[in-house]
Length: 199
Image (tube, rainbow, N blue to C red; front, side):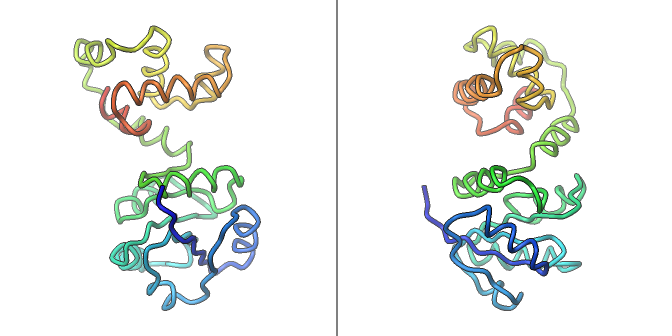
């Protein structure tokens, strides 16, 4: 795992205070955009409103400096998620989400993967058109157990781990274990990649 510095930037002091409580090992908080845009080789956590209408340009500049950017937003929505991810952000979520989500986002981004607030992951998966090629899907899932196939089909349709756990009356931890085996067997990194493969 790469050990990137964690840099915080926000135009909202309350968010900075909250994020600092949630995250250990913060290397610095940067006050000005000019300073932020000179940061290199870091995980940059920024609130959406700090960038305003120049968000595309700022994301581009941060990416040019080999940063991985997590954009957090007080009023997150799916269209903004698409905007920031399509312009190089590696994560998007609620600025006031619980600390375990922030920690998960940092770990995922550090591992060079995209992180998205779970609700939005399900929404994006639901937007992927289904090709209805049952033979191809069946062939892809031939090495999965019966339960893994059931879980994979629900993940493909955008169900959350909790919804799957409730449906099968098992723990969320068990669903995550099934998902991990599915991803490994199908050689995908996450739910979105699984949905793209199976739809």
